[in-house]
Length: 629
Image (cartoon, rainbow, N blue to C red; front, side, top):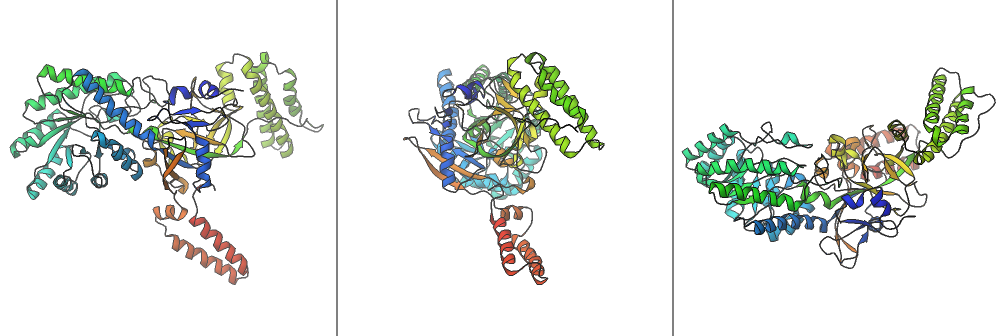
């Protein structure tokens, strides 16, 4: 029996990736800690789930914790403030949150609220996102940075919004886009606040390397940049160019890539200033990464730096470069999205059932069974730790031969079932012996193929699309029984009817594993798993695979007494809502079904009570949750 975080840290690595937000109670339950108020008692996450279930907010659900979000906004802004003060940098910092990373109203509203002391702004990469940004009363010095492709309507709204006091910057992505800006400026007779997006040549590593370097989709090369500068001079608008934007990349794993890219951006800033541009802001885009695995290394799912180191590297690099060139220090801007919201949300779901690839017992071979069944059963007579590989090989050989005999009709279905059960019992014995020896990679690979499947109440494609699409890793851990050593190894299968709907890469204390240690499913209560740090992109990118819609969402605030307040509840999609997304009218479906039911009733296939029950079942389904209830 372990105590407190023994198994949570030694098996799952919670102490490495938990960022101080998560811990384990003596009862073995994951607990949330308030990073803003260290003295506040921690609160059991299964306890929160039970409370929400009692209120009718059922799993699967996304749980958002406001304190986690506020803490990240504070960490980034205070990190830049401290670095600016420490290095003597003669400018300020004004961050913006890219709405595309999480467009949910409850998230954006709170980012604006928590960012207000720092004049924290928003980044809009599309017309709808600009509409969202302009619906928020931002601080006087906050920015709205407009990136992406823009039509005349987008540009017109951005320019006119300045009359309301918004600092709305139109970032030019191309020379052609400038033509549209000039047309709208002439139409309105109003000057714009302009930025220019420079395509850096330095290429970063990681999953999103393609978003950096001179093959990235957005921004201008040096030739295009000079065309824009010259055109702005000719139009008498060069004084409107206030911001230089350069996207470093997303989830940059290596801090030295940050240094190099910032250094290159400074060269452009210096030269544009010498060309006469009245630049006041240097926007270094996104890139601040999240250490999902806790490894603290430059890899696709980790980073080799802290937030504080990231801030210091930017401030120092810009300060040194501009001092050397004799250029005034600009206001620094970053567009950190992932680092702001990733930790604030978690996906919680229950396990519905398990498919086991071992068995506790098996019946003995019968006299009329094929001799290979007896040979298979005999393996356990010489199963010892020293002969484990041999027994694994023999078991697999006999099982495969028996399957071939079944396919050719030489043994019966009942005999094959008996053979499979004997094989599964052998696998249970082999799994139990394996920890007693130093296994080989071949044995490990064979045992991993015997991992159970836990069938879970969620859709990978709706709630964790990056796990499916780009092998993104998120920490996954049982929410309960963490004071008891896990006795099973599993992969997770979602509720969709798709072979891709599975998770088979997990973050553990000793590295990345193809299976997750868990406990045997209890018979008297639900068994919950939590997927953490899912606040960035996952809610925005989810799709309707098998027509599983959005999950229930609960936003909670941690209280000083160790309790929580439910600030907002968003019910998950009903089947009717999901049908409407794919162009079905639920009323038409009900009418069509009723017509068939009435036809069957006329033909005496249904009586009146059966008709009523069938129509009620259809309506209840249409109005119900898309997930298992």
